[in-house]
Image 1: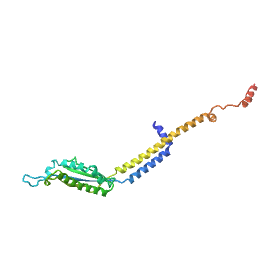
Image 2: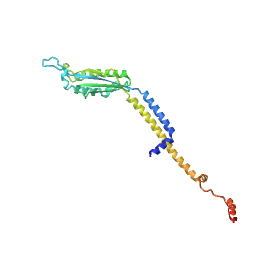
Image 3: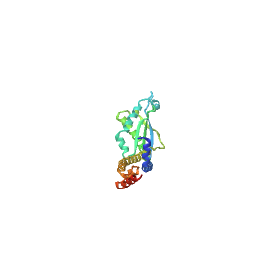
Length: 240
């Protein structure tokens, strides 16, 4: 199909095109405005291991950030992301999602917990609850491993977002989806109307070709009846 033919089809069904554009823009705007925005909040937790000097006195744990504490962070991240824990925090909030993972961009053992929800209060409540659950599971993990209490790894909250980050991805996605769906529906209506128009016009063309009155109007010679042709021939013969 050439561009000119496509433009002729759109011009032929311009009212469907206009109605589709109005409905798609209106529906897309309504869907985007009625869809709530998503709030994202984050908190980072720093893991430290106890350090003892040669004299047995406590040392500086920040001098040992490069030891094997990062593995503990990864284990706890997997523990917080299992299906049972997700059901525990997501069950009451259907729009809530969260992630717990070690910050791979830093060499320090830091876990970042991010929560997204359309309810800001629920997002902060879940963020704090996950932080508390992190401490509980860290202690239980070391207790089950039989580690001495004096050598337990500790986790402390390092940062917490004071303000949420707004995400308009869901409203935009819903608005674009509704707009595209209405436009496709309008295009489908044009295709159906164009296909129904084809056989109707073809039948009209065949009827016009079979109609003698139409042929006479088109310039075809009209036959003269015999009773009218006889006098005309007689007058022509009587002329000198």
